[in-house]
Image (cartoon, rainbow, N blue to C red; front, side, top):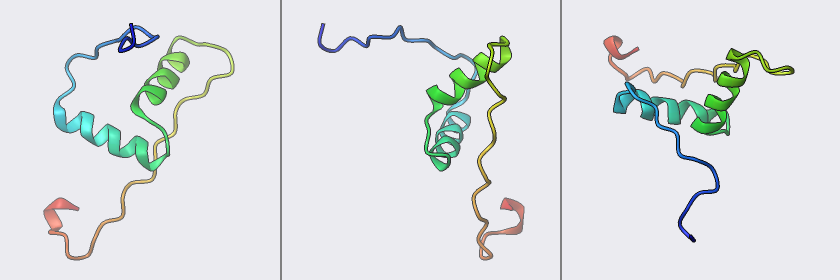
Length: 71
């Protein structure tokens, strides 16, 4: 079928919408995507050879006009 992915769809439960959005933003800062980072973590977790723990992206820059409680 034309609209069918070649890979099986995997679901992740227990991730709220804001966390999922924040994860997407963080992976974009590293020029990657959520799927690639989740695969990298899973490969590291199960001990596949030649895999390292995924590195975090740099946090976004804070603006000086941002309220203190948001920093």
